[in-house]
Amino acid sequence: MTAKLRIREVSVAFRTRKGAELVAVDRLSLDVADREIISIVGPSGCGKSTLLRLIAGLVRPSSGEIWLDGHQVMDPGADRGMVFQSYTLFPWLTVQGNVEFGPRLRRVPDATRQEAARRFINMVGLAGFEHAYPKELSGGMMQRVAIARALANDPEVLLMDEPFGALDAQTRAFMGELLLDIWQKSPKTILFVTHDIEEALFLGDRVYVMTARPGRFRAEVSLTLPRPRTLEVTTSEEFVSAKRRVLAMIREETARTMGAGAGADDGRTV
Amino acid sequence: MSLAQPGVGAPRGSGPRGFFAYFRPQESIPRRVYLGTVTGSAVGLVLLWCIVSYGKLVEPLFLPSPTAILAAAVDLLRDGSLIQDAQASVYVIVTGWALAVLVGVPVGILMGSFKVMEALVEPVVDFVRYLPVSAMIPLLILYIGIGTSEKIAVIFIGTFFQLVLLVADVAAHVPHEQLDVSYTLGASRAQVVARVLLPATLPGVMDTLRITMGWAWTYLIVAEIVSADRGLGYLILNSMRGLFTDRIFVGLLVIGGLGLLMDLTFKWLHRRLLPWSPKA
Image (tube, rainbow over all chains, first blue to last red; front, side):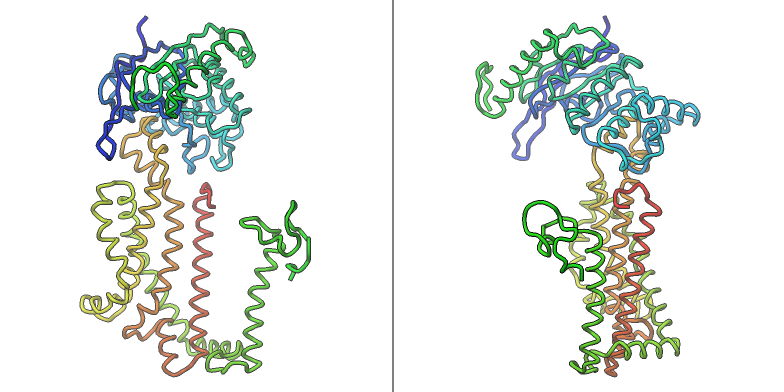
């Protein structure tokens, strides 16, 4: 199998004001297949967002390489769409205008562009809100528009950085199901960063658990849950046992960042 | 006023009732109570003024009665000087302010968006903005003389440096992730500036225009203190020499009225031009 996205030994280090070297992510390697959904979980500050920003080209690696479809990632580009945790819709554009933003930059003809925008607005269940401004939408609706905006640009990879993190629990569960529904209709390669273990397991084909800073992959949990999935799978035995394992790892890593020095240390000093 | 009615429309919940219920920090109050208080405040002030002036509690020299001021205003309108004074002042203020906006908004956006520009501009601006405008007048007279241009220059200097800093702050606070997401949608650097950064600053810039217009009015007297022969500031200064207190009040009321009118116009424009703005 040739991977769609290859991440090879990527590290990010920077100097603090006091001159100390801080390693944010440390020699991460990962292969992602076409149309695969990878979830990444880890304690706060482990560099999971940095990993997405690296793939997006918004951050340059200190060392290592990222390849997408045989091209090395150097800069941001439309082939890697991103959805952020914070609300990033352009407030001066309507829902339709936001979704058309990417295609408009590429001078896609009016009719094609509008048609595509309508299709994705329908897909995220916001038909009828085409002419609404972001200030008239709820948080969940804004994130649905952000997803539609990213998808309307037809990226090769969709990078999602805790996109549902600011939403309440009910909306979150709904958004997870919606995302899988969209994926069924228009499959994309997705990297999904979250701190919600259940969300990570529910969405991902594989779940990567990261260590506390410097961020490394600590474990990979693969699920054999069938697709299409509904929230019912979250009560299955495989799901619950996987959840228990991941939870234990995250707790250990979180304890480490808190300086509690919980067991299994590899001799790193803080 | 309705403030005295206990319990009417008071917020529910524990705590004090009636009058004191309106003194919960940041809590909203019924619209009726709000409007009633606004009217009460305005009417009360005029009432107090009437009692003090008609009741001869204060010398008319210090506080003329409303009718005396009205009479002075009618006089000044009849001989056409009030309109001319108002026109002269509006011309000076709007021109000085517009020049400051024309130069200051682009400089401010550059300064807030690019660190290089910040390093280039900020030391100068931070230094100059602490200089009192009145202290610059001798230099302005030396450089540009004592005509209308000097007055416009006073307004320009009074507003320009503050405006640059306010606009720079607006540009610096455009959410970084809005720029990031534009790059991931395929925008080039120029496109990010033109299609995201600039529109994102519009509500803030609009607010800044309104605020700095208010400041421009406060520099009017400073601008018209040197050899003016027209203007509302001149009217006030000149009336002081003859102790025409009623005319001073006419000047003040017209300045306040014009200022209020411009403020309302800006708020209206904000709603009209930027219907998407969270502040609209």
